[in-house]
Image (spheres, rainbow, N blue to C red):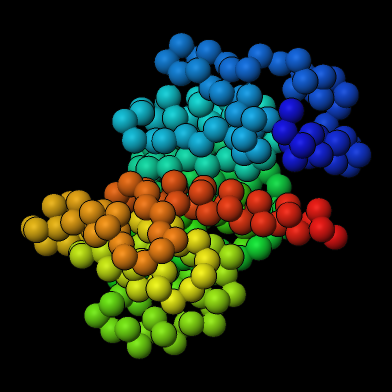
Length: 257
C-alpha cells in the first residue's frame, strides 16, 4: 500500500475522522467498484498516491456525478474532474455540494484535505488564449498539494516580458510551458534554466497551426535540452507529471533531513 495513503489514514484515525472499521474496509476493500457503465478504480490512490481523475468529456451528467460520488465516498485524497461542462456541474453539485467548479479550464475539484503545499511549480503561458489549458495544469498541480506560481502572456513576440520573470523561473523546481501558434516558448525557456520543462502545445492558432499540430511538432523537435512534451491541450497531464517530479524532489529532501 502507498506510504502516503497509509499515513493519511493514520492521521485521520488520530484526528477521529475515520473509524477502525473504515480503515479495515480500505485495507481489504475491493480494488474497483462496478457501476455498470464504469468501473471506479478505488485502488489507484493506494498504487499512485492520488485518486482516479475523472475525464468528463463524453459522459452524461448522471454518469459523471455517480463516478464522483463513488470517489468521494471511498477516496481519502482530493478529487479532480476535467472537461466538465457547466450544466454537468449543476447536476453534480446537487449530490456533492462541496465540489468547486472552475469555469475557465472547465474543471471540478473536491478538496477533502488542505495539505501543506510543497516545492515550486511554475506555469508559464505564451498568450491569454492559452489560459484555459494553463489553468488546467495549474489547478491540477495545486490540488495535488504543490505550490504553484503563474506567469501569463509572456510569448516570444515580446521576450522582454519573459526575461522580467527570470527569478521565478530559477526558483521553480519544475516548469510547465503552454503555447500555441508556432509553439516556440518552451524551447526559449528550456534554454534559460536547468530545470525540467514540460511543454504543452495548445490548439490556438490560425489555419496552418492545424489545431495545435504545428506547436506539438515544434516542441518535439526542440533544440533545447530537457523538454518533455505532452499531448495537445493536455494541461492535466502536464500538471500531474510536474507534481510527480516535484514530490520526488520533496521526498528526497525529507530523507536527507
